[in-house]
Image 1 (tube, rainbow, N blue to C red):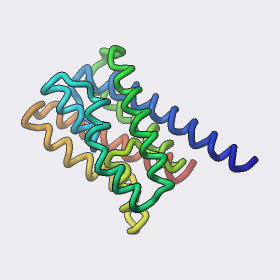
Image 2: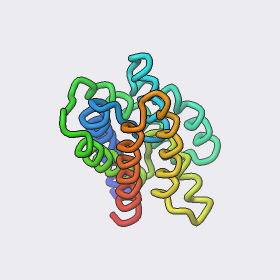
Image 3: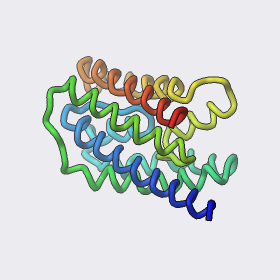
Amino acid sequence: MEGVVRIFARAAALVIGSILLGIGINGFLVPHQLLDGGIIGIALILQYYFDFPAGLWSALLSIPLIIYAWVKDRNQFHGSFYGMIVTAVFIDLFAPYQFFLPIWLSAILGGAICGIGVGIMLRYKTSTGGTDLIAYFVAKATPLNIGFIIAFMDGLIVLLGYQTLGLQSVVFSTITILIAGYLASVCYERF
């Protein structure tokens, strides 16, 4: 019975986290061309450039990380593989739903919602298959905080978007990823 509850909790975390990411990204980040970090951030840059669905981009870009998880941690592989697929579906499914709020409020709410989604997923050993999977492996092997690792990698991705999106997007995207990294860490470690 305990195993069934654990499987149900993990599946619920995967779906809830993916829904939160789909809402956070499309509802708050996309209207202002803000970025999340990691693979999803790269997928958003590609979406802004080529108008190709961010969910599909994120799934395609995550394939090498999923293969790495298959080799290193089969338990994490399953959660990441399913997480990658479910997250990609919800990101593309929620693409039409956008909230046109002031940019500062969108950055805060988008970061909070995405951070909680990622944190919930990581807490139950699932992920989007993106750089949060890298952060999971690095945090397991080092004393570094998982939220710090996510925020650092996300910051690098946001800097990549500077040339495309400009300074305003970089500043508010940085706010987004700092909030997301902090809340991912809180959800992962404390709940």
